[in-house]
Length: 290
Image 1: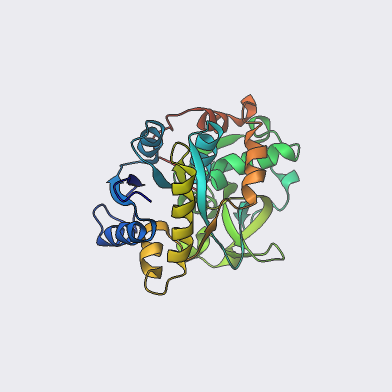
Image 2: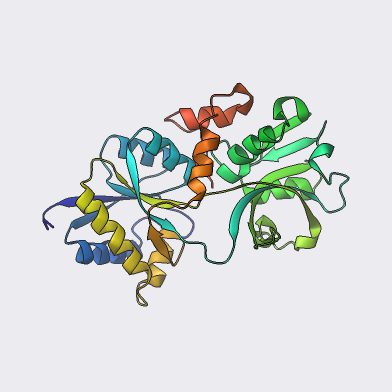
């Protein structure tokens, strides 16, 4: 590998990873050591900017949320090199109601109010909306009111405060499709306070992608290095700081096939913002939330 070859790593500062975090420098140094490449960091302010910079070839490799990856992959801009491994359970989109609510089944949704998360949220809008349509429920005529809450926690609070009858959000499910964690865990509410009305689809995990213009040799080297680094005892905390996980594997998870199939129908006007968020290269304000 040519040590003078430059690889730009795109990062979006977050609650766990602030701009100029020393852990990102440690990660970039470790990646450079293992690939023989000159790795530099480039912080961007949002997923919208990250998408634009990858499209313009200003960034070579980045951590992408599901919808952003699916859109860039569709346009042949990026190729997956490694994805997060969820070892214990399944990450899925669910429809949740307050435990004391009269909404217990999908048949009870008529005339109700639903809290979505964000137009670019896979688990809090796109997949559940498509999942409802796949079950013969048209959101545009079923619900009396729809609104965006801005986050999974706020969507759940809207249900608990009875400002919404149901919320579309995420849950980690065990092998019996029983929720083991969800936004209630984040806000300190017991699982007994909510009722899962339906599981509406598995959500792919975020992944690391490289621009398609990056050579196959370099993409392979980066993927191998990332997997090796995620298993290294001294780099686990660094990997978790940068990517929010401790284990990576090559390529994409099988759950992306289901997302691709769903998004192939994204031109349906009943999807509303879901259609626009997949087709547009300029996401609406608020960024992407998985």
